[in-house]
Image 1: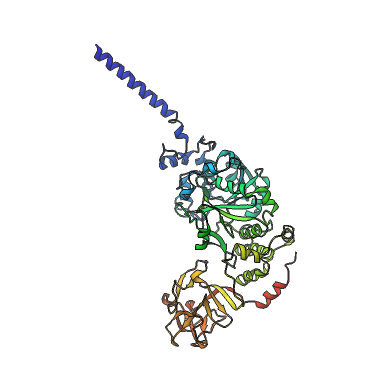
Image 2: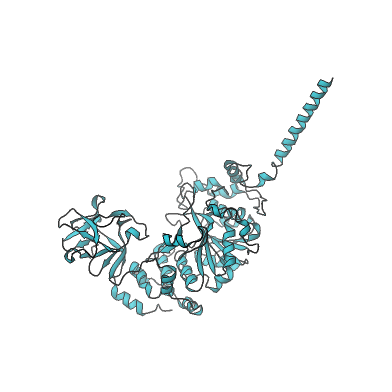
Length: 571
């Protein structure tokens, strides 16, 4: 009888275990399953869960209220035959497939990991301010949810969403169901600058964090920013901006050895840190002083933000505001820094998906001209040389911003160039044109060659270097201490580099003609890029391959420039 009794006990035990397992599964499998991205879930499982509904999470004090993702995204999903890029200038179908949240690769330097104990327990909370106009619903939702899930709850006091008069009111109002979100809406199109000012005015937190509406903050993105603001009251700090592909939405880590810069046409660019700058750094994760911020993503002490001038509220829509805030911060006693241990992914697009009431070009010229007139002193002549059309662009009153500069006793632009951005090349007094020698999207490039070697064409990159040339008053086309040379007086002769000092005077002179040809006086031939090589050919201005433009031409409208330097824009 012992055998059958033992068998019944075993069967009952097995049944009890099965029941307990089923109950455990129905209850959610324990606390580990409530941790987004925890060890108990694969990426596919996590994305599958978040694609339908964002559940409330409870890990390290972070939470996201229940929100019906599908109901929010369904009205704007791409339908068969529709262009996925039309509305937002990125692949909306790829964005929608991701849903409200996903895991992304941790792109930080390994030295950033395990530093949580180094952050002060006295960090002040921040308001996170998003502004948008007709943003893709999946992009703005994912931006907000990533902030909530990857930030300590105690450090996010509020999320302020400013809808800049989007076509669909519910794009923003439905998001008010998410925790800590306050929704504001403009009664007319105001643009990024005035919308951010509106969000900042609503904020009650002591720190302001501005983010674009198509981002994904990475692991422990917030603490390093707030730590630096805690240490440096007058610092304006930006994360390293990783790349989210506009096509596949792949998350791609960006270099940590970059700083923000610009050229004289006032176009933002990324500059690689010089070997000397790298050598001077004590650690690859210490803050990087940057002459310029990209503008879309940064944190700052709220009191400093307002005391130093906030934003120029007379700038329109978008563009140029990063120049104004960068010049003003440095010249008026603050610092701009990139914080390597903070990473935020950003969707970079090739065009603006929205309209500019006065046109993109005119809006950008108005905004950058306002920055140049207030902050660049006499150096603004180089901006006007690069953008002659800006001279006649109305800018409105500058009185308030000029008074602000006087009140704050701000430093000169000469100080800024010498102290903050010494690597920005200044045209020499002997130059009449300089910068890149452009032919459409391609530029003349040394290709790393030296004396007696040829030059070629390469995609323009706006970073100077091998594409930095100048036309002097003596007619030489100079690249540092090398000059373009022509060693034979016949068509088909390659253009080469020679030391400027060794050239004979009769072979040097070039003329940049009004028809945009670059003519060599001694040979009566023109520089030509046909067949991908740079040679001298019989002049023919109708050929695209013979038309060249310098990015900055100081000889253009010289009389107007001299007059401009002597007068102030009327306040």
